[in-house]
Image (cartoon, rainbow over all chains, first blue to last red; front, side, top):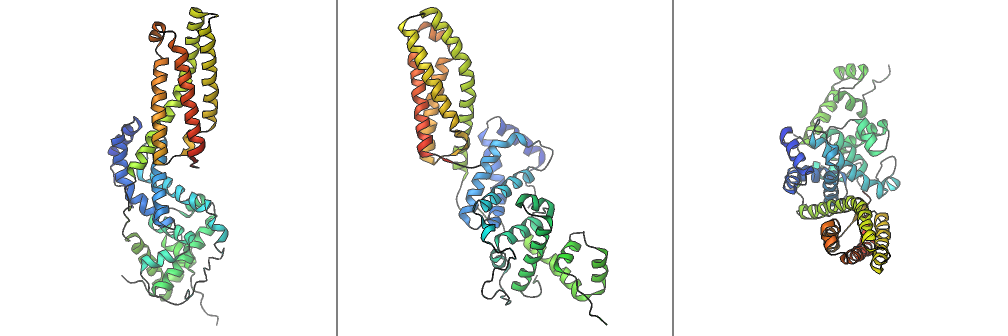
Length: 178
Length: 194
């Protein structure tokens, strides 16, 4: 995901939104609703959870507009809020308590190459692994940033990424199809 | 002769991300299997990035807008409460000067005390931290609009000088509206936990 609004336009919209211009706020919402929702879908368990994250993210954006100083990517700032909101739900639901620490989900056929497509394989990953692989490989977060966001260690983030890739490889077959 | 150790996925991922060790780099240069696995990992990252985005199934903007407007109104209300507290002192001084030891003076004092007590209760509820359903948000918005009108009237000393008897009534209205807001927040709202 990349910044879809030029910085000058982002600054102008944020300034108007801070002054109470709801048309500017709506423009920001329309620009980023899809990337925020996509990120939320990847980090949460259901479409409903992702919708809630979308709503919570933009409410937080409305509240905190003054905190964006305009010296960095607006999308990067909004994305961090969205990831935090998604992970807050994750923590709230205490998934970590029941997800096995060795990440061995033990589902039937786990070791059998299933030749499933990437979308299905990604969805099949445990939530924690999917979050790490998405934040690292797609959104470009470092392991240090992921560790901070998820409240885990850097080495744990690295091992989660490796496990996720091992699983994806197994489920998709030995070679990655183009 | 011992068998050659292959690089682990974690080592190959580090190499892919530009952080691999010298050993991994040298090993991959000499091991076709690990070189192929490294290529797989690079391709997997590209494929993940190429996955389509999702469109939200419903338009959430109306809900976000309503909630944002409600929060903005409540922030203004909280700020207004501070301003009004200062204004109240002036109004009370004016009323006391003009109507000292009159029944009207006592009525104003009592209405102001009720309003102040209700303000405390309202603030303690932390209305900014509560999530409202659409219908409740509408009720709250209506009460806040009426409260804003009362505040505006109380912040108009010239009008009050022309009609001093109205002061106690406005403060009573204010206490009543705050009481209604407290009721709504206590019974219909839940903490958003944001």
